[in-house]
Amino acid sequence: MLEGFFNPGSVAVVGASREEGKTGYSIISNIVKYGFPGKIYPVNPKASEIMGLPCYPSLAAIEGNVDLAVIVIPPKFILDAIDECAKKEIKAAIIISAGFKETGGEGRKLEAEVVSKARGYGIRLLGPNCLGLIDTNSRLNASFAAGMPPKGRIAFFSQSGALCTAILDWAVGNNVGFSKFISLGTKQTSLNWS
Image (cartoon, rainbow, N blue to C red; front, side, top):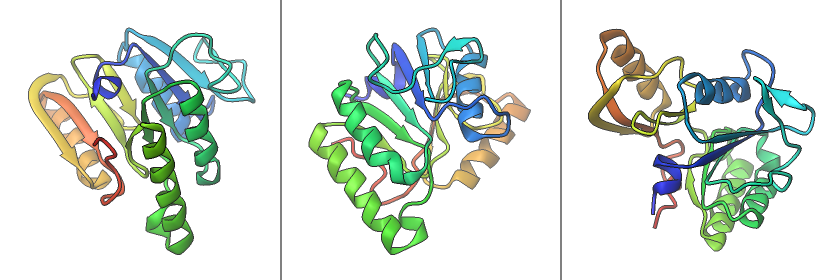
């Protein structure tokens, strides 16, 4: 049921960026840097390649299967991205983007629409407004964290991005291993795993 998150054969980063300092750059960089062995598909209509990988203008343009979509685009485009995930038969998505219920009424409404649409399609969501996830067993760092802990037997989940960042920094600095590291993001609707 959660294979798409923790053992994907392929990952698409919707909103991958060529610009250092951008979240879309950090995520694609982490996936490449920490040795993810599966296929990596950057998605950005304004780029032909990112970090030596061919870049695609949309999820639909990717010829192969995609197991996990990491979405880091402005909130107003997220509903369309969920539609694209459904057309591509992607069943797991991480929404890194902020700008949902933490911003007030309109953001709350948009978040409810995103969750409802994903549920209707049978897409499991992590986020929105999260750091991402790390699975050391599958060598996947689908986050914008500054490092990756070594392999270990502890799995860590937290809604708080600040807590995730602090513990990750401590773990990397002290060589403490983790099996999985998951930032849940927006608390009440973050997990559509049922």
